[in-house]
Image 1 (cartoon, helix red, strand yellow):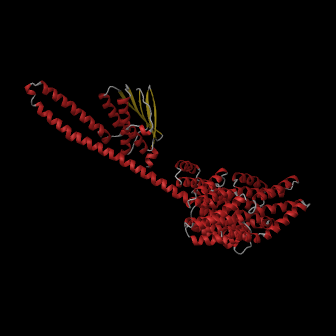
Image 2 (cartoon, rainbow, N blue to C red):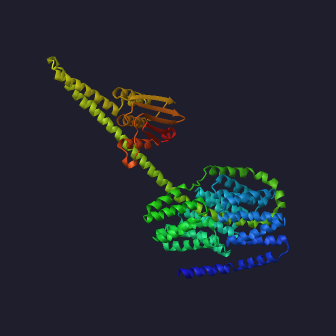
Image 3 (cartoon, rainbow, N blue to C red):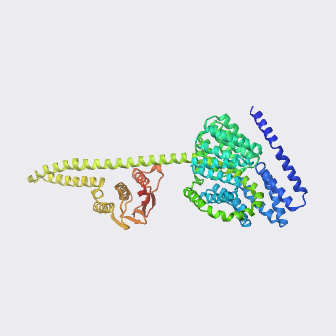
Length: 636
């Protein structure tokens, strides 16, 4: 049944394209037999445009012929037209940098030709939009719209409203996008330019797809297909079918989805439309994955990976769907590998200034209306030249719609992925904060128990034993002395668990007091130094920094046999450096699974502070450095 449907579709396209085939044959004959250079170049130029959506390689070949002949015969007009064609051809192939190079050269040749300048502004808007430079693209679109309105050129205005609508769609202002697409349809509906109207229908369908209005989206995709079939625009037919397959995929109607996706992928591949092929392969592979055909999905996705092209969004989608495939087939290492590649692809996020610029450009457009009257007389002289280039500007919109289609499709998936990552990160921070707060509460409880319970009992025992000292009993005297030492140790432990200086004063005073106390109870010489700006931190942050220093000093005393321990805090340019160094024997740094409780506590607190820990250890001593960005702490 599928083969019959495909054969039926091919036969219809063949009938509809018969007129176009006659046109191609006629132009080819004229190009080969004409002795007039202008006629020969013009024929090759028209052949290139006719074939751009049918056979991209042939379109390149005919444009090469037009350019070489024009160059050899010093036919400047032909050179200019060929450069204009190269911009569109390279854009269709996905070589955006090359297209911009040709556009820069083209701009220099058309200076003073208003209609061609309008077309060049439109082309620049398209390329900047593809590469994510929304400010520049919006400015170029508005400039083109100004010229077309002065010329009262409905076709040019229709194309430009279409591209502005796509810009609004990219920044998810869908109601504004629909308004501009409606303006485009209003300008194009009563003209003969069905190619441009088909492009607008395609973009309007995309917006309804993003709004989850599936019936309206399918309606306009099918309208676009009907018009595209009339001109044998196989490229746009493929893109429409690809979008229809995405809707059926979301509805879990996989049999319908796979049929449309395969037709779109095969058409783009057979006709070398590499700029859109990456997105089509990613979509087809994803559907195979959802259907459980992992082998076929892997074949499609990896084949495209070898020659990956297209927009950053399409490449990101290909990596993401490879990750999904390997996750679904329990190949976790490969899934992680492609997920990392997915994350590395630069996010061409919407420049928020683009919203502001669009409004500013609209204001600028209104203020320039008075000046337009002055240009009208000059523009009237150029109308005869405008007719010759008008067809060029119209076809540009078709290419624009094709290239930007999959970029807009990926915005929803990116947004969901980022939300999931943000939620996971927030849960991790809350869990870590709860653990640290619980540890501090437990320290406080133990300190109170030692101070109020054990210390009190020892004091009572001491009092009773002291009353027996009158008997000059030497054993009792020694017991009292031992109880005194025990009381001192209990107080020290209590203060070590919850230092009064940290509670009542600031971090610097607490650390200074701690180092002084440790100097009196241990053989190692412990020094503390503070340099740089003053420090004003939240108590939670101060407690965590104090605990890190406390743990590092304790480790140095217990394990390194150090004689000198230096503690330093430096605050310069909102960067807080905490350093603990000793001259001990050092230790071997093990992996995370073998790390002791103390070092794990330090790493947990460093992670909570969003800081970096650097440990350098050798037989000559150990240096621990914690770097804390105070701006990040303040933001949190």
